[in-house]
Image (cartoon, rainbow, N blue to C red; front, side, top):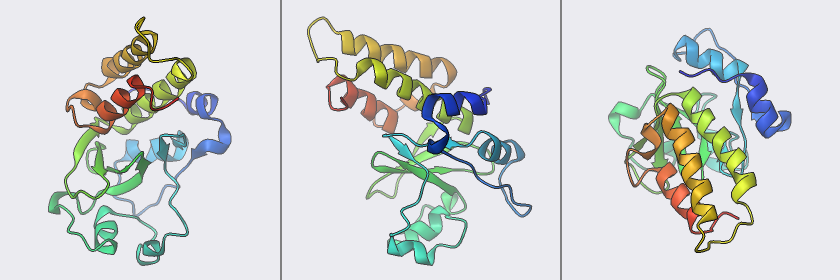
Length: 190
């Protein structure tokens, strides 16, 4: 894990856009993951939300701990057996984001698919990636997709800042991070 402070998250997203998770004595989360979620929290942005849709009727069947298994069951789908105990962190674009509480790795489940891809090596690198994306958004927003490649330079710099901390986000060309950065490069996000 890299060091991410609560101040970094609040300064990047604002206090109203950070969700904190209470520690529970019966939690099966690794200690450092539970500590990160309760002290640093997860930011809310135009790309990621950790807040569940309270109007979603399928949530009535989900207990207080939204595991992947209960989500898949609510959708009438089969959850990959190895991921049944993973906990949902939120939604990134069109993918459900979950964490393996035993090792802290973060995975994405693209909408409508039962397969998953490693998204980040751990929770701190996931939040670091969101911070880089949020700061980069201020740079690329409004930049035209042009021959001089200014937008491409901003996108490449963001990718590099993420890659220096964690290679996982761009290890697969079909990962959520790879697709998002390709879309940003094409001018789809501002």
